[in-house]
Amino acid sequence: FCVPLVQVEENWKLDANISIAGAELSAIHKATNWILTQTPNTHNKIVILTDSQVSLHLLKHRKPRSYAYSVSKIHKNILDIRNRGWDIDFQWIPSHCGIAGNERADALAADAHSLDNTDNYPIQLEELYQMLEKTYQNKWVAHWNTHRKPHDLRDSSRPWPHTRHPSRPYDVVLTRLRLNHTRLNSHMAAKKLLDSPLCTACDMNLEEDVQHFLLVCPGLNTQRQSLLSGLTTIGIVNPTLSQLLGASNLEPEIKIQMNHLVTRFVSESGRLKNL
Image (cartoon, rainbow, N blue to C red):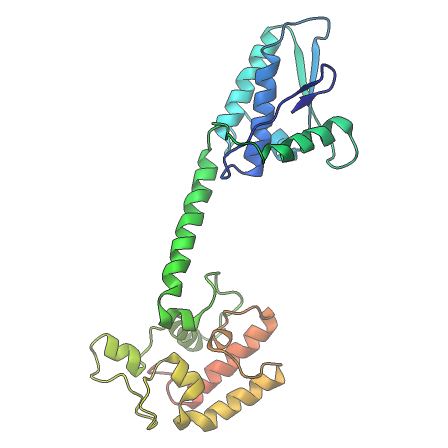
């Protein structure tokens, strides 16, 4: 923060896990801390200018749902400031509009990234949740990437978008294929329900997994030709398994059409009721 009237400037380096909202609140908190170190004089009106609408919104509430630590500390400082005879208020200003004090505060914040020491301003509960979510997401992705079968089925950990089928039997089939939880020989053998994981519809001596069933097995070439022809009409040539199952960056309308083509293939293969 900066106080142009008395040429005071302060900046500090925050923990990398502190959010933008947390950083903005820390600046207001430290600014009010600085005010409390001053002696009241003829200037008894204080206005804190900020371009953070989030901070101002949070400060309107005595018990906000987020960033309660910073907000409560700022509220306490405001009370102490007013008890000393000062009148304090807050004013929102637009960012990057050439307002000298705000531009200088932004420059100080940018310079703080190069400081050697990190301030011990506490990480707040919301930021801890974000840290945990990011940590476990990274662990999940790492685990996902080391297991070939699921990774082959889906190359993204994001939710399945726009892929539900209006018919429940078809929706069940799509879900089974995406989860790799089918009655195909590979999965049944893995659960010790069959002796061999090999496909019995062809003589390629390959496991009957989802990849083989949808894209490889010669025993289903006739049905697959119909599938590939339909995919070509919607602009999909040489489809990948993840594309067929909806985990790709295609338009929702394309994915919906692809769902119908895949479920039609399953139906024509005779596996709709036992997949």
